[in-house]
Every structure is written in structure tokens, then in C-alpha cells.
Length: 290
Ligand SMILES: [Zn+2]
Image (cartoon, rainbow, N blue to C red; front, side, top):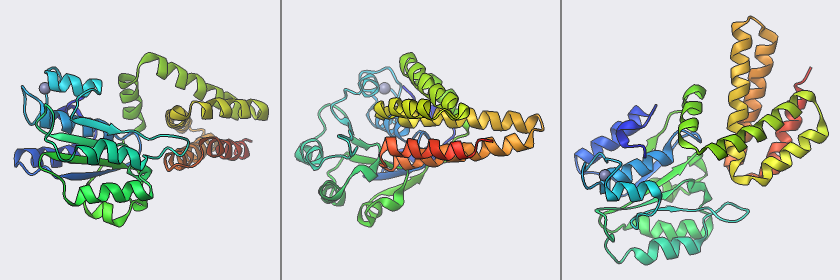
């Protein structure tokens, strides 16, 4: 697992968390704000390990029973609240069952209980309100880490109860490096294959292939974000190569296409319909073709 001291590219955020741990002032609720794939969830897990580690308290060791369970996602006191259904939201039932029902008891085996929410904008209406009560009066040794790409979409009452920590955008090179390290080979291969399909279709201007590739990408709903990331990184690389080679028209075209893909990724991460967002993106990409 990635420990707090091994988080890449987020020195400021990590320094804030380390200082809180060292002075025993870890907040009950954090709001990690930053672009997708900037390491918010990884940092949340690293914080949970630092708080629960047996052998290196405050830092995490990665190998003790507590760290191993957190890395495997089976630590009883460290929970990620999952998004569900087509709307990719966190149901109020999940908040009631996994959070509120456990508030009356102490952490099972750990020193601190940590709830992680990968996208706080996925807390809609009643779920957000249910969580709000707990955020107002959290029990001792209980911490929430809400992550979001779009803090402005959250209820002001949720925002005001969390201590905000900003995550910087990572360079495409670092993102690619981290993605290669973190994901298992199968996922990386599948995402690459789908991104390749979109890439070839977009540049051949073949509309049938574009629709086919977009359907496949949307069918793998969980991977759309990664597929778009891969596509954006390739376009960014092309733009850079073109600029180095003094092909300025092409560099400008590829930069524009990169932005179209990044905009789509942002729309998808904000719960827009995956297929529609990808199709709209491909349509825009086609209009950029010579
Ligand atoms: Zn440990």
C-alpha cells in the first residue's frame, strides 16, 4: 500500500495531515478537494493506516495486521462508502447501515474509525442530510474523509463541517506512472484497448466505429474515467511531440482535442450520463479533424 510518506506530488496536503497527526489534532471530517486521479482516495487510505498502524503509529508501515487489512479493504474500522446504481449515488440506506448504526460503539479493533467517501457529490438529498447529523456530532476516534472534484456542488452545511485540504493536479507524466503502478495488468490492458479503439475511430473519422467504441467504453462504466484519462494523456503526448517537432498547427489541434477529452472526463465525474458524454465528446473531436 502507499503510505503517507510515499504520496507523490501532494507535498502540501500531506504536510497538513502529518502536522495534524503530530499535534494530535486530526480533524473529525476532512474534505479532500482536487481533480480526479490526484491521489485523494490513496491519501485517505494512507491517513487511515497512519492512525491505525501498530508498528509505526502516525506513519503507517504497510505490513502490520492493521495496515495489511486496510490495504486489502477488509479492516472493520476503515470503510469506503460505495456508489451504487446507474445514478452512481450513495444511498441513504448505506449511510444508515454502515455509518449511523455503528456510531454508538467503539472501533472494533483499530485505534480510529475512518469512513472514506470517494465522491461526496454522490451524496444526494436524504443521504447528505443523514450524514450531516453525524458530521455535526461525531463520536471520539471517528474520522470522515470526503473527497470531491467539485466542492461547489456540495451542501454548504457539509462543506462547513469539514476541514478542507486541496490536492494539486498531477502532471500527465506522473499520472501515467502512478496508474501503471497501481492498477492490475488486466484493467490497464482493457482500458488501453478501449482507448485505442476510440483513438483510431476518432482519427479515422469513422462514425460507425466511433459509436461502437463509445458503447463499449460506456458499457464498462467504471472504466470511462480511466479510458478518457488514457486518451487525454496520448493526445497530450502527441501535442508535445508536435510542438517539439515545430509542427505548430498539429500541436494546437492536439492540445484542443486534449481539452475536449478532459472536459468530458470532468462531465462524467460529475455524474453526467457516461455514454452521452462520450458521444458528445467524439462528435466534438470529429469537428476538429481536418
Ligand atoms: Zn502498520
